Length: 100
Length: 218
Image 1 (cartoon, rainbow over the protein chains, first blue to last red):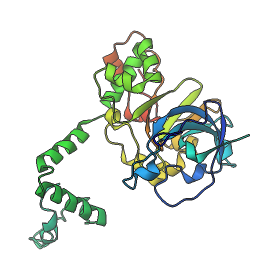
Image 2 (tube, helix red, strand yellow):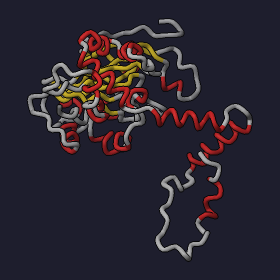
Image 3 (tube, rainbow over the protein chains, first blue to last red):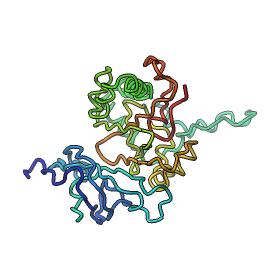
Image 4 (cartoon, rainbow over the protein chains, first blue to last red):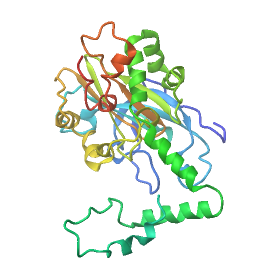
């Protein structure tokens, strides 16, 4: 890690869990996905942190951004569709923890 | 846009007695907090010589000019040309450039519908949308109803759009929350073998590229 960009910590296929945290501010992690577990679909790239950029700050260090795939049945216990249905969400690395 | 915003109050009082039927109000008639802020900011930028009214008008015109026809061209080419389809699925931006379109200000992720997977796009947080390929998003795409429900009960929402998805087909919702923009590559309709790209593009609708619908039939 340097001051400009944080190194990716996860790879496609890694099991991750979204932090269950409720900070105030411009956050791009939807409420419905916090605390849920999924699998990294891909690393999208490394982007300025929107939680900083929203307040006209530098957005540094940049954060790796992932697409994480969640089974719908993990998100909504009463989900009515197929058990194979899924949802992909973009999530920044500082919102993710490894899921064992 | 126009400079009569401040006069609107007065307009209500002209010749109201002779009217046979009431005139229709402008939809943006209410001077809300953000509308007032936009007018103040725009007038200041013009007054200080940073922008001109014509430059702002031109930008609005450019925004309105974009349409789903650009996306339809990309989809039709992917249907007709397997090498192009491979490029579109791996590097959406490069695929846009390859047909003379803008790369776009965001990274484009293209998701392919197949006989076993149906993809649908949403932005639950706001209204992220690949505008350089599809133009301005439809009002329903920005509605709280669509944004909150399509992640929760996608099959039911799709049914409301007239799109039945069989039980053995996986429904995959893509929530566009950050720096990616999404385009659905719909399934090529049956009976279009040998069609030219231009003819194929006529079957590609905006809604089929958002994923709430299928393309037109041949």
